[in-house]
Image (cartoon, rainbow, N blue to C red; front, side):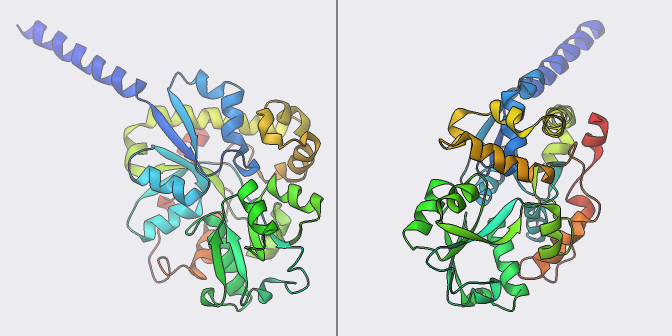
Length: 330
């Protein structure tokens, strides 16, 4: 009887482990077609996610804040969005952490419409204007508010309008619904090349980011609830390993070679424009997913500049990210 019970217990443990390992993992991406989140789709296109043996689904939301909501509701196990959400959420009593840091610069740009260019020469001119962001509570909203506050403009002195990215952002600017707005590639190149907008603040490079924000600003990453990470370390390790391979691919291949691996509809009918945009900004990606030194402190400083949820709170930055899985992947 003892041996029967022991064998039965072993079988039950094996079954439970198998079910745990094969459960579907859903990852929400805050706009999967954006170049700032390139490592996610690239890992899928190159077969790296499939190689993990896990059932992984990448779903897209137009704004990072929407993706975050899906994760908090339990509909997704992780988000590919901006690291700053881990700090904002900790301030609100929710523990999440970046397990793979994709970039060390936001990759975002504030564009000014052709019609408003004569009135907006810097963030100090935001007073009374309508500014486009992907979503309220999104990282584009965070950064826009910070740049305004740094220039002495209160959030109550301008209007932020959620307009998404891509075609919806372009339409909002073309129709005069927004005077300026923060967006990413390939939307930036589409608007600038058409003459519909000009660049006001450029956060696509480490140099531009340091000038505007005061240091490296870790942005795109895979963040997940800390409780889920702690109980699914094997799955997290495989995910991080797949994204580390995608990041290494980015640094060892040309922008053209990378573009060839992406879905055709990502080019928006202008492949060369996509290639040029990627060539100019792919240095923002980390080489393997490791958090840039000093980056979390810069992000906390930015959020403290305007985010009432963060101001006055004791934030433990060590709990907002981990390097455990990236170092093991190396």
